Image 1 (tube, rainbow, N blue to C red):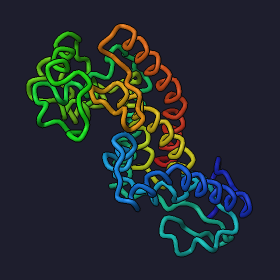
Image 2 (image 1 turned 90 degrees about the vertical axis):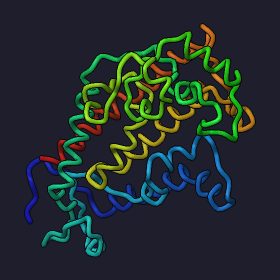
Image 3 (image 1 turned 30 degrees about the vertical axis):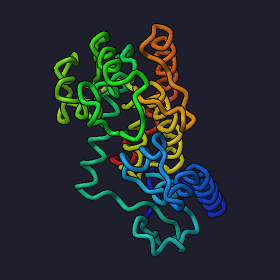
Length: 289
């Protein structure tokens, strides 16, 4: 198999060092979760990144250079089914099959659509409030109290408009909260609904990067994980729950000051997400080329 035009070649020393650095970074990123798991402990904020997103710490640790990269002196990768070896001893990722290409193509179309759409803000993280509206006894985090109580929480939802554009948040709304939302996001129309101001859409960059593995570079997945952790913390700070016992300071979106603080933080997350989304788009394009 000959080299192809535009291909990046990494020396054996370079790619082995990149792999070592990524594995060390992933060890640090996943250490809190692994430590809690070993002790049988849970965290209401960070565990979400390993439960809602179905990727174990080992998956984040597994290194890949991404598509379009040839690794020189890579005979040691002969047993790794992700790679194809060339006669010169270099290795490249095996091409995705038809099913994998469909998955990559969906991620690419979604990322392009979000990147090209005008951002919307002023949702104030109310999706978490809508998930308990009128159903305090059925809430997900039952071990944690509501800061304003059930009636106070419901009053905030009634007073502020629900503007959720993210299907995976909207689908957890209580039946009584769904009619209050300004639209009805669906799974089939997520490419038409999702937008770059959404905290969850930016958090999901981690999901799309991992689902596209190994054709996306591992350093991109790790960068997306770090952004997802930041977005998740904002999500829970703005939630109706009192997580102060877990060291999470509430962001009181029921006040005008809190809403202004939320929107500023939301815009900061979006700003960090923009270059990551563009990197993911380029990686997906290379994988599908």
